[in-house]
Image 1 (cartoon, one colour):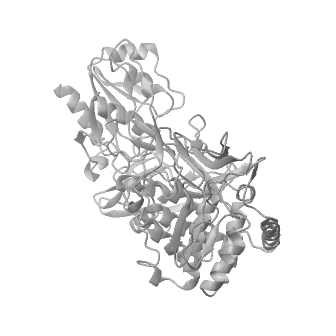
Image 2: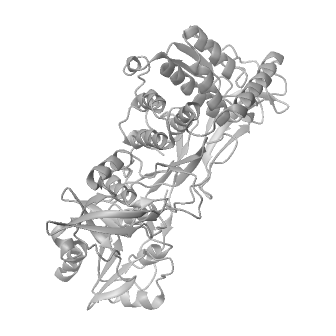
Image 3: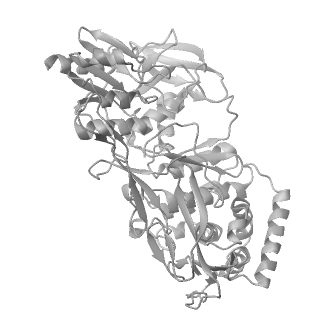
Length: 604
């Protein structure tokens, strides 16, 4: 997130939905204790630089800090810190890097108290502080410095602060540092810089420019790889909303990932390290991708597989030689199940979502090559040559072949799904549904448009509210419990005619984000039975960052809790009638979850 620019919404994903914050002691401060002995001085020094980098970049509101390219700074900083051999050289390098952009920072091998905190304000001074927030209209994450009207106090969200409040005092490794997060500003210039610091800033920018004019910007450059770890790690450290729900030693992940990045030499290894780090946060929206040409996109073998009975089983196929119920054994000579499990390790989210996404990624490619598959049917291997000729519009695929958008599958029993872009519930369809004996709504996938909202409006005689969407107010670093959040939701008004028959909803892990917002309403208001498997357990608007070298990552920037305030993240919506697929059922071309839904309606 460039501090002076908006973070761009990840347009590739259209997940829509809607921050309670973790207490500070939830993140294990293990520097110098648990993990430090595992790493050499270079990694430990880079860890110190990385931590200070995040505090200065996101929380120090000096003019200097707001007018430097922090991506370039990170790359150059990595290069400089790698050259330090001892504590004295490290401290000197840290001062060389941070004092020009944060003239009021204090760095020392001894405990320091920031000497810049004073009650005496310069004449005509106002206060300045960083404000980070997600724009509720555009889903962007934006950062800007805001100014007070006088020098007495400054208001950020619904909290008021004086100069000297919120100063960051930390010991990282053996380095003590102190950093103000509120500065005086006179005539729109922050107070604290000197002629000497301005010279130092000019000199630093010259060194960065000189270094970058010669450096290799690809992931063959170790400095670029490590800078990517530092930038993304800090973004999560200060802005990820779900630390309370995940038990992770995130501080320990920093040196671990830096060390891992030193051990790779190419782009693919870079992605592996980044994905493995992000997977620890258990966020189904988290991912790292190449900045590919949009006209190329992802292509996929036109089948779907699912992890059933400890095997990868075909659930849907448009390849003539492959049938539902076939077991996928090999893909291009590799053990398919082993590759699937490796992909799961690099996937973030719940177990059910990791399985869903790993199954998708196993069959996806950006290069559109031919593929050689070996499947097993009735104990016999079958070799099939096919191609990656299906271009999905999302990063989660439907596991089943959707029925028609709207159909009467048995007398008085209707089936509907909302997966098509061009399908729209109209008044005639609603009239038919209002008189139906039963309705099966398929949400084993990602709904499009407002069809789900239209349908729900005819299920109720009272206004329906969504779950609680919590918008982070990150005033303090390290996801402090002193941060606030803004509570929000949206509602659905009842409409006539009211649907009177029994309604059953089908769902599984392919229901994510917006789909889970819909499912959460169903769950809370008990609008029907829920048949199938747990949903993804991932909800909240997605934001994206671009990193040096041509990689981007995306993550959940808005927290969602259930209507009663209980946890949704990592849990999802649970079925009232659990039904899993079986190999036998798929081989017989049966949709066992749909069958269970029909049975429920007939029993009623």
